[in-house]
Length: 200
Image (cartoon, rainbow, N blue to C red):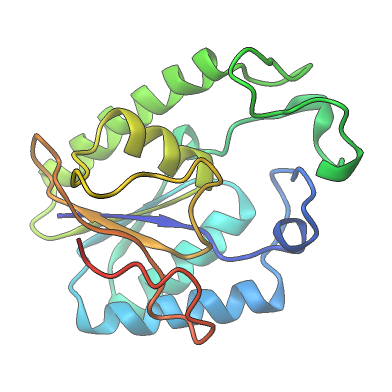
């Protein structure tokens, strides 16, 4: 079993700003990470694999500490790089940074980003196959989106929102092909209750 998890909230998330790699969790993000960790005290996790960006690593360390799981950092799980746009509020942009034909200056185009996520997916499968129990993967919204749209077997009645995954949301899938999703974008561990994400 693999749990695909987005990191906790940052000030950049809340303020709708394109983020830098070292953007830390906000206080709310730390609270979300603690709630996530509490949720997994009742669900076994053998290992945690995470992006090396600060917000993902902090979320993953909280989860690993609560579950006793081993922790490994994987740079392939980084968020898509928006290059020179980092630090810019979305409201100030005169382009759609998510347009399929847009390549941010100094950043990754969609094809380049998807190719990196392909390598990350191979790494996830490799680690999952070596573990005796479930693997938690703590990464970023667009990585979750890329994997879900291109690799995961979603129920027919469900569609992935292109707006992305909620902070600390959990998507659970079988570790073998066809990688059937059993829980999608679930945030029931959060007090706010946004995006209930009941099992599918």
